[in-house]
Length: 88
Length: 452
Image (cartoon, rainbow over all chains, first blue to last red; front, top):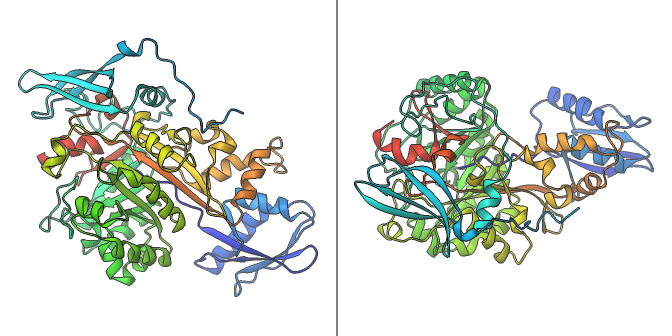
């Protein structure tokens, strides 16, 4: 009997809103608004680059807007913050 | 970089004369006896002789290259914070753990009931419908002693018997969670998880993180041989209920040579297609209950067989070199691969991108993808603390829309294959009701029948 590594719990979808504007929506369950705000601040906050901007988190839709000129860099950092990106 | 999936040739001088000594036990009287491991035409074989019961032989690897690759693989050692008992008679007669033990607890197995609702022909624990349950207080006391011995919380598996039969399972999970334990699984046959749709959700709400779901085959014949009947519909329902509840599901496959060893790749493909957390294979052992026909056969399924079979059955999609010896126990005890299930469904073992070294310290039971990703991701371009790393960038791209997955193999020992060196290095420990820790294999072969 072994205990295999747990998969990352957090998953988001990224939808393009404008040329540099995107909506990040959590599709994995979050237990509370406090947890949601913490994840946005800590995990998403650590994944943005200089010049990027996160909008006001919206608990009702579990989403936040991101303005970035380099979405690929943001996604890369998101993965290594252990937040998976859903594509469908 | 060399292709890490291709096994490096291991040079063993004069393989015909290969041998090393082992300390083992007699399969009949369980007394300590010396033995030796030698290379033969039939594979790598342990030979030993009991003065009272004669000679015994057991295949411990399909071939010398596989055996030596694992035996020579590096280990990462962390001793238990506090030995629980003095060393007196020596391994394996002091078990508890004593100061001679060379690894801490990576996974503690707590058998909360000896009752089971499935009379499997093959059962390590020899469980039946009748038995006893531990109380919530007994489990809490044992977990407290574990926390003190380890100096930290460890991953836990509540097992049995069938743990979902325990009337206080939810309270046990809540209690463990309240004590700080974070990775909590049950080792289950899934029958109640299938029939009671709310159970998985209740367990998740109580703090359970995953289910180690016993599932040996997709075909009815193999399932019937090992479990007594075809259980596929129940397993599928259990998986769906667990997934809906947000529980991680790892398939646990007991491999019986000649029965289901032809279907290893089928099980991997099934688990990957179901987007499960992973699949772990363990070789059947002659401990507990098993058909008499199994005991009379000399055929064994070892880590070496597993590597060769996976490569052949997957037509090279997974190769022997993708399966890395585990670094926490004795490397002969386990193999492991971190795998990405790509958007197109193909499997990519990530050692092919990153090489073996960055993964080695994560080849243990306490690890998880989050820790792995955060640690290796520190070298990604733009993080400001390392040079650009194309392999990490490529991995990040691959993970978009993909799934994390893993494949393990646990080469369990029984009294025929017992090697005290492996037992001393074991990190998968049975936690008794009294709070004692024992290597799980050793417990099954020697101490379970003593009622410990």
